[in-house]
Length: 171
Image (tube, rainbow, N blue to C red; front, side, top):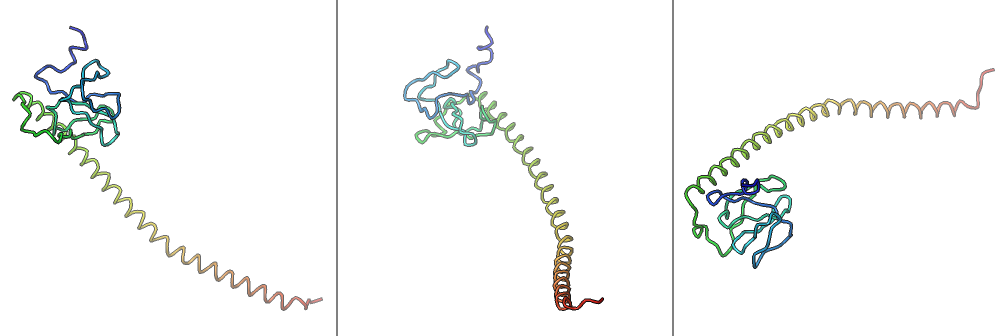
């Protein structure tokens, strides 16, 4: 058995999104994918909403969440308008495998939520620190502005005194 066949999903294994190189193709008759497999009328061909990459999956994947082959984001497989989820004849073993994959994706999403919440909390804390620092700098800026105005007024007054005194010089 060659490596290519060893890695290919068997009939009891769910088929997940594979990359295709023909943008926007919605086959009306079987088309060959890069790996030599055919894309048939019953396959679902769609674009990843995150990176726009074209994906193809067996019709039994309708309604599932999969990972994009390019960006790795969790993507919901669309259910074609003319298809009802009840129309899918799925083996019990396949349902269990899909359930485990969905649970893994859910766990990964929950972990990412925890990470993002921690990042958000750190950002809120940093914002509070920066706001506090800005608030402590504000009075100093006000004082500097007032000192600058006082210095400008004093310089103007000194220039005025010097100009009025300019005609008299002590010998």
